[in-house]
Length: 93
Image 1 (cartoon, rainbow, N blue to C red):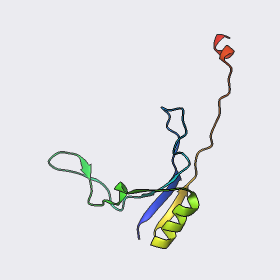
Image 2: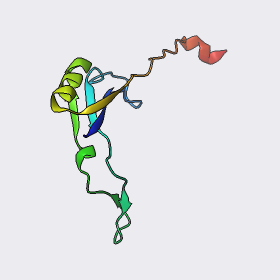
Image 3: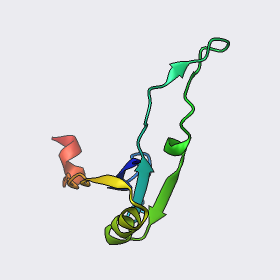
Image 4: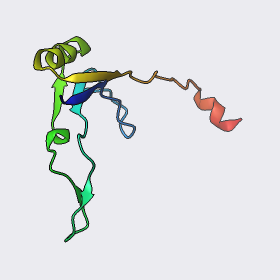
């Protein structure tokens, strides 16, 4: 049985906007370990499921999909949003 993790997309650290951070992702976990390719040395495996990432509008829709398709899942809670409130004048103290 495939297993997956369901998580909310975090805010990009390089951008100030919060676009697409309200959607939830279902991402499959690896079934087997990656092995280095003897010719190139790149890591790879025969399992193509981790390349699939499904997007859902909310957590309930992602859970309903996983239950309907028989996918074992665990939910990764979104980190708490920490606001660092400071005034411009604090730069000159």
